[in-house]
Amino acid sequence: MSASVPVTSAQLRHLREQAKAGTVNWRRKLIYWSGAVMVGVVAVAFAFLADKAAGLRNQIIAFSPWLMLVVTPGGLALSTWLTRTWFRGAQGSGIPQAIACMHLNDFRIVDKVLALKIALAKIFLTCLGLLSGGSIGREGPTVQVGASIMHTVGRFMGVHDPIKQRALIKAGGAAGVAAAFNTPLAGIVFGIEELAHSYEQRTSGTMLTCVVIAGVTAIAMVGNYTYFGHTSSVVPVGASWLAVLTCGILGGLSGGSFSALLIRISRGIPGRMGKFIAQHPILFSALCGLVLAIIGLLSGGMSYGTGYVQARDIIMGSGDYPASYFILKFLATIVSYCSGIPGGLFAPSLSVGAGMGGWVAQYLPHTSPGAVVLLGTVAYFAAVTQAPLTATVIVMEMCDNQQITLALLASAFLAFGVSRALCSHALYGALAVRFLRSADPRPNSSTPPNPATDTMGRNQ
Image 1 (cartoon, rainbow, N blue to C red):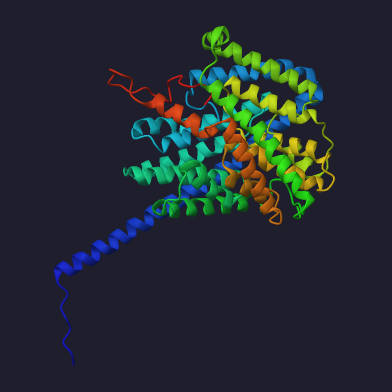
Image 2: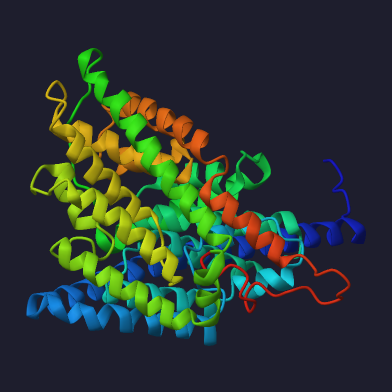
């Protein structure tokens, strides 16, 4: 018989430390996973509230379209007042804030920008904007909300490593896109291409896990749906690819011009107009609301809100929309951005792109109309965001059509090239840079400005 080897106290201590470390590691993972579940739940709840707000707006329009001449200016003025008085940091899309927070070294500022108070305000104020008739979306705000949730989880866990903190912010933002669109692959690509601009092996595991969990949570709550239904359109190689060239160029020109204009506006409007806006922001927001209401009357109410219903109808071929829809929705989105109210650009951009594609389709008989609409959608969206891979994957997943992937890619990259020639900086990246510069300490000042409380770029 072999004699048993006695276990020393040092070995016992080592085993206990290993067991404790394993328990702590699993506890941390469970809390992170719980945060990802919360992102999915909040994204679904956000979508539900946004739909209710849009439904209430439609009831107002059904009662009398002229009421929007009062509702829209009043709603935008109220949103601007609330944002500037109580919820500074909730303005704009939310994606520039998430990008900037991944590059800020002062996490006291990040704590304020990604506070849960601001996240909840973002949801409420976006719904108020949709109720009022703003041409805005909820997807961009969902990115900031998701980043806020995961950042709060990290703070609760006592995470102080900047790399891990940024990984959680990126994971939350990507999970927000996945849950908002029910497009998990797009969430991953968005996290890499738009939020991080690179693939980081050390942080990709956290992002992938959060995207999957948030996506599964959303599917469990609302079912496995596709944002724009199911299409089977194809673009065979040959004469049909003239649509790729046409949509790529037109989408690049219009989307690039849109981004260049918004970046210019974010830097401030010169002259008397700029002075008037600075001195009377709430009145200016109300005037923007009046312009939106007039555009809404001219479009028959189609320019209000996200544009999701109109884009779906155009893509599925179940609606007849005039060429003016593309122009009016384009203008409504610019005016909504100028007003400074919280709200995203994703859904309106997809709707503008679909309208453009529907207009182009009538001049391209060699390609199925549904395919041209998808090409126009991805081209315009890629030109606005200058993120062609994200645009392609989002459109591909939203219409559940992989057969058209190559044509979508070609149109998106062509539009990206044209857009870059018109606008040398990506829209969200440019807004994030302005956010970062505003967050830097002022010369000869020991206290850095606070992005959550400073005016610093109301339209970001």
